Image (cartoon, rainbow, N blue to C red; front, side, top):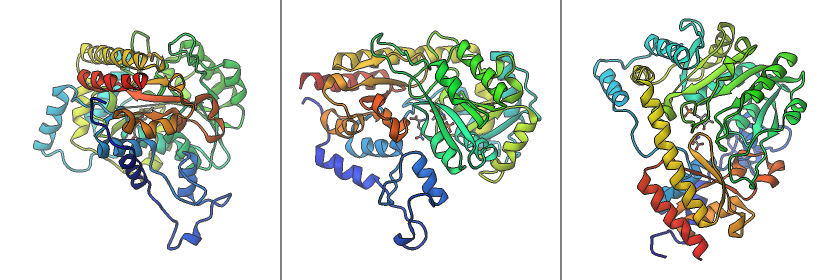
Length: 438
Ligand code: PMP
Ligand code: GLN
């Protein structure tokens, strides 16, 4: 091989170090898997991280990023950019620190950011949002999701999501004592594109009077699907019929490639029952700042705030005006970022196809899902653990986004991130090409 890649023993040793063992209370004997799981065990179990012996694995993102860091492999696992976003946003944070914006902001968020979020919803989607009562700033989209689920889901309540799903959903639903019902997105390798539409009859069947929340992630991680209006309208119809709340995770809202993203709150009959969640992390390449938000009718904001104020209370004082400055940037900044990412997608897509993967070309987001079956594996998780040693590249198995009992259809799929510099993607592609040459 013409490139440095870690040897298999180093990779395995590092992988084991990445696993953490947690026990409840003082002694291991206090650990009791089964129906009497402690809340933290339930949370881990929800995301598939609790083993039968009581050990808890790190999330797939933590495990794979540590593996990349410790083996020198190119990290196409966890989704974070390796270049800075708009200079104006970074400078605004520096300025805010210099100006003394370093103490607790108001619990619902700095006024300048709430105004910017409301203006953003108006400018891009024609949605009228009252910045005083219908906007809540959170510690990333993650806290908005956590506070929403903990605020609204009671023991036994059902939450419907598509599957694969972002891992935090399953963990949070489990922590809340809810039941996670999923509707599969069907992978089709025939058309070599993101043909991941749900079957609307399956969606109809999943939503019942037991459904408390329909949690919709569009643009979608990991598949890159942008749900069409027909699907969005069906979700609204079902939510109205069964009196469910719609929660949408739109963190990739500006990163779409030639297809329109319509927030579900803009669809007829949706606004009054929808909590729309987003964050600045993806849009401005500031994933480490953790400035997120939600917009919703005032009574729903009040419910979520009741929980949120005892999670973090507030966060990121100087980053809040900086994200506000970002949201006010001209349209071209947003569309150029999407165009740049689209070009990166195409570099990695080409590299993966050359290497022998069958891919679905995503319509949005940071990730390409690739089928490793043509390379002779039916186990994406094992494949990802071997990949750093094989080629010096890290990806994450799609199985991490799927419940344990529904793995079959997704087993050989691997997610690769393309939110990286062109030269990094070229190098990763060259490394991956050695797989087919081997
Ligand atoms: N939702 C989805 C679908 C994501 O991919 C991510 C990861 N960035 C998040 C939520 C979390 O966003 P944040 O970093 O703003 O908490
Ligand atoms: N959203 C990022 C991803 O999907 C990961 C965030 C995390 O590490 N939890 O890769």
